[in-house]
Image 1 (tube, rainbow, N blue to C red):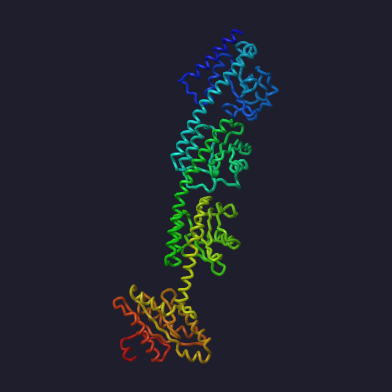
Image 2: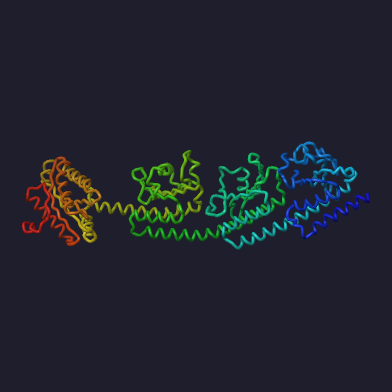
Amino acid sequence: MVENQLKIDRFKSDVLSLCMNSNLQLNKFYDYLQILEESLARFFNMEDCFLFQVSEDKFKPTYNIEVLNVELTLNLLQPFLNGNKVVDLPEFIKELSYFKYHTDLMPLMINNKIEGIIVFKYNKANAPIQTELTEDIINEISYVHNFLVQKYEVQSNEQKYRKLYGMTDLFHSTMDIDVILENVLITIEENFSDLEVELILSNDQDRQTRVRIKPFDYLSERPSTIESFVSGEIKEDVASELNCRLLNAPIKGRQAIYGILQVKAPLNYSFSNTEKEFIRMLAQASGNALENAKLYHQSHRLISDLQLINETSHRLNMKLTINEMLLFLQKQLLKSFQPMEVGFLFKEHDYYVMTEACTTLFNNDARHMYIQHVEKHFHVTQDPLFIADFSRLISENIDYKSVMAIPMIVEEDIIGFSIVLHKEPYFFSFDSFKLMQSLIHHSSLAISNSVLREQLQEMVDRDHLTKLFARSYSDSYVEKSIQKDDSGMFLLIDIDNFKKVNDTYGHQVGDEVLVQIALQLQKEIGTRGICSRWGGEELAVYIPNILESEAMKVSEELVDIVPKVTSPSVTISAGMITWHKESRPDFQEIFLHADTALYNAKHKGKNRVCVFENSMELQH
C-alpha cells in the first residue's frame, strides 16, 4: 500500500514537473497526452496507451481518429466494464488491426462518471497488473488525466479567444470583404488543422472576391445547411454518403444571415461543446464584420447608383437619336455590371427586332436561345427576368449562364427589352439586378419619346404616298452635301403626259404609277443617295461623291427602265446637273439649272435626259 502511494506520488510529481517545463511546447492536446503516456509507461508498465474522451455518450479518439471504423458508444462498452477496475480488452476492439497487440482497458472516472478510457498493452515482464493497478491508482490516474484535460482546455481557450479577439479587432478596422473572409478561413485552419472549412455565401453577396467561396443554392444544399441558414442556429449533420460529419454555423449579422461557415470532419469525429461555441462565435463575429463592410460598400454603391441614374436620365433627355441613346446606355451597362454581352431589342408587329447597339453575340445564331427564352417570358408577364444559372433551365450546353433581362414599359405596354449576359453562373448580384431595373425604367420613357420623335420626323421628312423623302428634306440634304462632299449629281424628273394618265385612267391609277416609279428609283439608287418627291409628278434624285460619267449612266438607266416597270407604261424626262468641289455651286443654282435641263429634255421630245449647259439658259 505504501509502495503504491509512493509510486502515485512520483507519478503525479513527474506529470506536474513536465507540465511546468517551459522548454516543452505544449500546444496541442496530443502534447499533454504524451506526458501522461510516458509517465504511465514509466511508473505502471502501461505501454502503447491510446486514449478515448467521452463526448455526448460517445468515445472520441484523441488522435489518429482513423483507427476506429466503428462508433464506440457508452452503451456498447458498458457491459464490458467492471466499475473502477482494469478489464481485458473486448474482442471487437481487439479485432481492429491497430489494437491487435493491446491487452487491457482502464476506465477514467471522476465522481463515478466515466470521462474516458485508456486502451493499453501491459508489460508482462513486471508484476501482474491486477496487483499493480489498484483502485487508488486508477482514481489518481483519472484525476491526473482530468487535470491535463482542464489545463489544455484553459490554454487552448485562451489561445483561441485571444485569436478571436485579435480577429474581431481586425474586423472593426477594415471594410475589405476579402480580408474578413480570408481571416475566417485562417482562424479555422489554425485551430482545427485536421478539418476542412468552406464558406457558403448567399447570392446577394458580391462575387468579385479573391477568396474561394461557394454560392448558397437552395436547390442543391443539404437540408441541415438550409435549416441552419433559415433558423440562424448551428446545426450538425452526419453525411454518410460523403463519409464525413458537417457542422453548419450561420454567418449572421444584426440585419440578416449572409451564409454558412461549414466545417467538415471525419465521420467518427465528435465536435465538443467548446469547439461548437468557438465556431459559432467566429461565424457571428465574421457575420457582423461582413454586414458592416457590406453596408459600407452598399452606401457607396447607392450613391454611385444614384449618380449613374441621374447622369443617364440627364443624358437621355437630351436631343439624341435612338441609336445614340442606346449606344450610350450600352456603355453605362458595360461599365456598371461588367457583362460579356449586351442587347437591346424593340417590338415590331409582335416580333422583337435587334438594334445596332447589340454586342457581338447578337449578330450570330447563338443569340436565338437566349432571345427566345426572354420573348416567351415577356409574352406572359411584364416582370423583369433574373437567371442565376441558365444551364439549370435547359438541357442544352450553353456558354452564357447569368442572364438579366429588363422590359421597357411605356403606358403599360412592353416596347422592347434590354438583356445582359455573362458566362459565369451567379455573376450578377441581386443589387445589380435592382439597379438595372431602375436604369432601364428611367430610360424607357426617354427612349420611347425618341422613337416617337423619330417617327414624327420620318412623317415630316417623307411623302405619305410614295414614301420618298419630301422636298424640304431633299433641300437640306443637298445643301449639306455641297458644303462637305467632293462632288455630286442632281437629277430632276418629270413624268411625261401624266395629265393624260389621270384623265384616261383616273387619279388612283395615276397615284399607283407614281408609287411604281418611286419604288424603282429607290431600288436603283439604294443607299448611294436619296430620292424625293419634288412636287406633283416631279421627282428628284441626288447622289453625292459621284463621277460625271457614272452620273450620266445612272440617269440614262432610269429613263430606260421606267417604261418597263410602270402599268400603264409611262416615260420620264430628266434634267441633270453635276458639280465638283473645285467649283462648288450655289444651293439655288443646282435646282434652277436642273429645271432648265429638264425643260430642254421636254422640248427635245421627252423620254430622255439632258445635262445642263450654260447655253440652255438663253434658250430657256
